Length: 473
Image 1 (cartoon, rainbow, N blue to C red):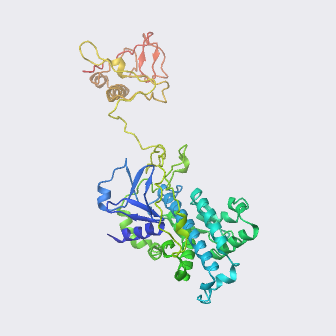
Image 2: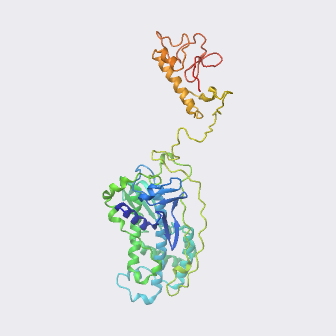
Image 3: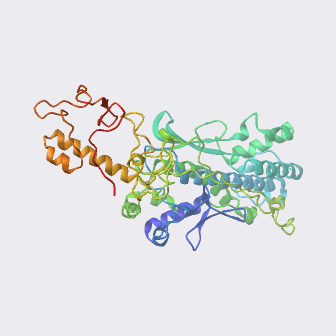
């Protein structure tokens, strides 16, 4: 495992992912295991084995340090952000419950040091009734919006932070302060004010300063990933601080620690430059081409997170855990092809001559004569306009015939009738006279020539090409 692998593992652990033995990524939330995927494709860690056995139809390689700076948020970064939002909200729920337990337990107050007692000075007294009521309502609300119950983090391109413009800005909002927050109607006024006091203690200045937990990035290498990590780090560090400060009073099963080991390495990405460049840019990591967006946004399956109500009880009062119901099956949307590294954000580039038959509108079926030879008329399909070839013109044989015809015409234009004849093009009398050459579209009708078709070939009054001697064997 090289240095880049170590950094990637630290970032994934911070976000709530683990790397399995087969290099697939899994998400761990509240004791449950969810395979990590994008549009039904497994996310694989970029080991040498995973890269050699890579299956583009079923897998996406994790490599967010190779992104296209001018593009939108990539599917991988979006996946990280969504799971980070869920972890941050779940951790906030556990911390609020733990602090309520401390506030409602008078016996613990005398054991608190001066720094810990700041909680008692910031929040009104909480009794067991309010805590039980909060747990019941919060658990239900969390199951409905696990990624935005208390906090919501999203990323913005070309934003402003503290009055200065930046390439990317991370925005953190706190829906719990909104007057439209649905849970407010289920509490008495003084009860809800106590809940808000705890929230203000958990995230200081979160109500008064709308940019208190925002952040930014001006990275030229991975602006989206950098902005996500910078923004989420502020929230995660505050949760880590509170869990460390009140650890002796909190239920150890409800502690969600955020691994911050990635910070020092991420602040010095130059040391990983060699390993980063050794892995090619990967679809799903490059970023969405905003100039050519798909009609529907790329969706990733989001785990259905449920909390066992007994998990928020104190260790002494906790009963045997009840089996959690199996998560509801996630219906995957129809896969949307990932962006091409050449800028095609809708579908990968198709082969010019695919092996499978192609039936475009206006294409013709190729037939053969009684002697087994292909009909020349079936090989050439005239385009509706000389500037826009018919999409049905797919046959390589037809391309060869046209190429031969064009080569013959070019030979004639070079005043070499013998070469034109060798290429199968018989020069009609009076056409393209060497001493007075004119372009076919500019030349008048001469000696039986009624006009010219869309390829510039002379035709008679019946529309037949004059002088074509190409024979397909």
